[in-house]
Length: 109
Image (tube, rainbow, N blue to C red; front, side, top):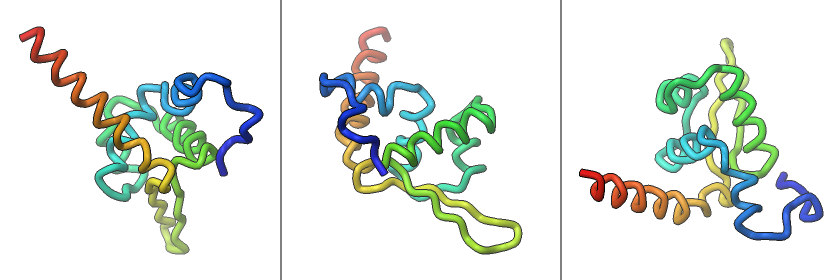
């Protein structure tokens, strides 16, 4: 469930930054835009992130309403993460960041 509106900053840009400003969150979103992922898959694809930091970020994103966490009743337990509709709505933001990064990188080449 997303945070109550009263707890959010007044500035819309600040609201967005509050939800995704951590570099790990943006990389998690990038990977989940592709498909549903398990914890280990996210850990490998995101890069040099500790298990604790990944867990903390996933929990925060779940509380913000950006991702779903689905636990399967299996042994060993299987947990999958996917984007909610709200999380998927950040696709244009991530696409713009990717485009800007590509253009910046090409300017330096």
